[in-house]
Image (tube, rainbow, N blue to C red):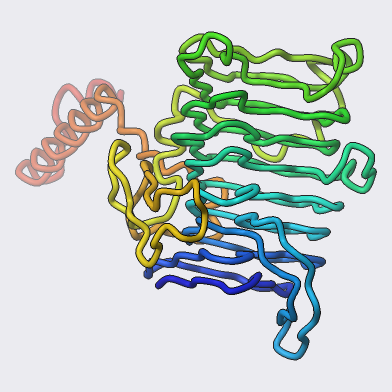
Length: 358
């Protein structure tokens, strides 16, 4: 199913988009807008090749049509909204951001998604002077930041951001950036730096002097740095501020492959080195797009408990240790022998066991 929009698709509160069981692509003009809403779930869809639209009358509910200005061309735009969950989606090739959350939005979880082929991936916070964003709380968990990404994974202004158990395959400029003193808690991620020796740093303080950002609370804890990647921390390593930027207990970065294995849309079978051709896209919406992307982390179609997926790891259960298995088999064998001996000897216990019980 390809939904090629003429204008923004505007959500109301208490709505869920669940793409399981079908293949859903949202593309075209405006794409998805969440404005002044709450309790919204967007799950298991492709969002790509979104471009600006507007200056037109657009339906914002079944009973209301109103004039809308021009949108930016975000994949998913979150504006003054709260309690939003974006899970198991694949996002790429949009004009502006893949996901932008601004103007006092909070209570946002972005989990198990696959991001690729984009410049400015994710913006959290409207403006350095917009104090309504100072209370923003966002969790970014179990996502795969894949191929051909440049920057903003995310770019934060103010607020409290928990970046936990994500796989950052590469970037061209930086992975995590910010300004206006956001609190960033990076735990259990894998950061794989690009080949460029000048782009190994994970972090970037945007247009800010070190004398100012040295007191910002940015920390790395249990992160795995690959190919020369390095994270520049600042502020207090242990601070009450991190309590607001801590949503779940991080798992070890050693398991990042399992933790992000099912990131993206369920049921896609593309290999990490392969490509997925978007049906219905002819290349006429975004000049820089090519119409293909790599999902690279697809999983099975049966995703289990929907509301358990937000922090689901996709990892296989740990096998029973061989020593315990051997002990259990030995005990069971002895028990069977004891029962057979008792039956054949009219309830009498074996001599050795009788001595032990004296």
